Image 1 (cartoon, one colour):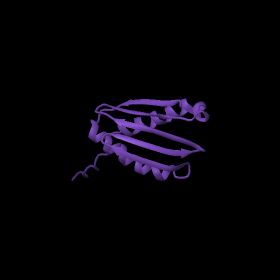
Image 2 (image 1 turned 90 degrees about the horizontal axis):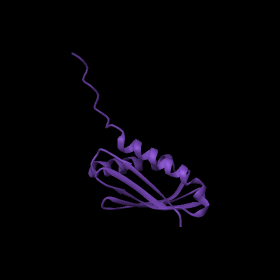
Image 3 (image 1 turned 180 degrees about the vertical axis):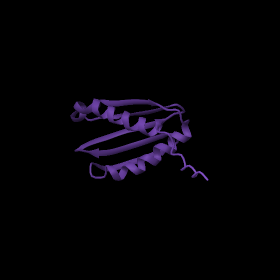
Image 4 (image 1 turned 60 degrees about the vertical axis):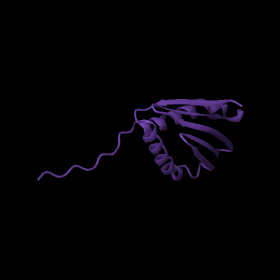
Length: 112
C-alpha cells in the first residue's frame, strides 16, 4: 500500500514537543469532528500510533517525536493517492504551526 511521509524540524526538545503535540491534538479533535471518524491514537513512548477515517478512506500511521524532528508516516489506500501531496502539505503546515509556535507569554504588568 502506498504511503505518505513528512518530516518537520523543531527547536523544542523531545519532551516539550510531545507535550505540545498532545495538547494541540486534543484541541483539534473537536474542530474536525464532522470530517474525521473513528479517531484512535495511542502513545508508545515518543511514538504515536494513529488511525482514523475521513471521506470514506481509512488512514493509519505513526508520529515519531524526536529531539529535533517530528516524523509522520503512514499508509494511504490507492483511492487516496491523488491527494497524497495535499495530505502531506496539510500535515506539514499543521505540524509547523504546532512545534514552531512561540509559547504564549503571560500578560505584562501594567505600568505603575
